Amino acid sequence: MPKTSREQIKRDERKIISLLQSDAGQSIDSIAKKCGFSRQKVWRIIKRLEKNGTIWGYTAVIDSRKIEAERFVVLVKRTAEPLNKKLVDSIIGRKLEEEGEKLGVTIRESHSVNGEFAWMLSFTAPDLETAKKFCEVIHAVYYGHISSLQLLQVVFPVKVGGIMNPNIKEYMSFLYK
Image (cartoon, rainbow, N blue to C red):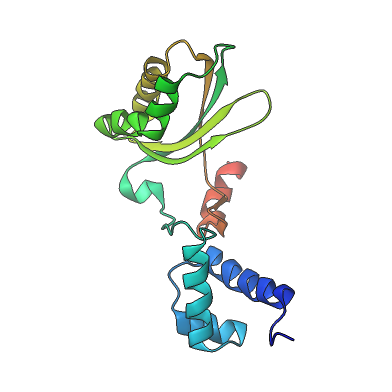
């Protein structure tokens, strides 16, 4: 009989994943202490999760105001026009990201979604004018495949990347003005 069951391995992985999601920058020693595991066990689990693609990246959550950027979300409605290889290649090839970078836009997240809209992009831009220009770029890059775009400006982020905004009280005062 194996020393550790599959269920226990999954529970151990979930503990580590949860801690990494709350702070990906914490040390292996810190994670080990919080989980009650050895440092080596934590290291092995993290490496296995990276190798099998469960963990496919790490990121920093940034206060966009401190880098002189605004957060935006754009919701995209598709036309009935079927996708073609050229369009799929432009998505995979990061054409939109390259065009956005020319404007000072950074795409933070991109999701294919189910519902009224087909796609959702979260990005930062220096200002609303630049965000609107970026929407024009989206239309141009995916010409014929977009029926409409809805641009939303984020007033204040409550939670980003699973992390609660440490300045939430400052932002919340905005609601009471």
